[in-house]
Image (cartoon, rainbow, N blue to C red; front, side, top):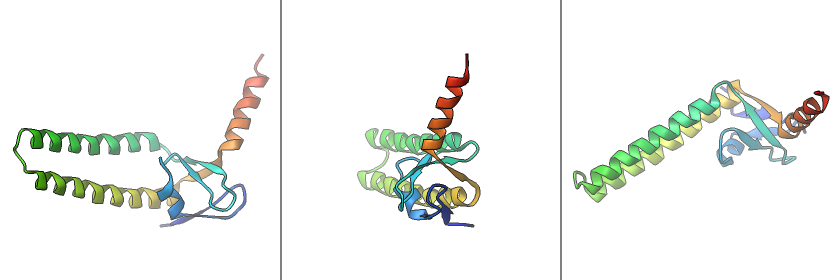
Length: 122
């Protein structure tokens, strides 16, 4: 169970906090050299979409219950607080999972690789 990784560009430490600050789990930024690193992890996109759909579904159900007056505003607030706490727990678990099993590839290398492949084709 790791909470740190190594930047392939500068060989500096990429901490768990870098993944927490990222907008999505697909790309993080090295705090030392500021390189954008693509996270390579099988089915990461599918996991991310499933989590977002589950949370949006729970929020939609809560909003419908609030609008039909089956729950009070305080219960809706409690539901939202639970969702925020759940999201933080998932962030921590996903971060540990990524630093333990994923690899990081500089985005600049991916772009150069794609460009060189497209030039080689006749």
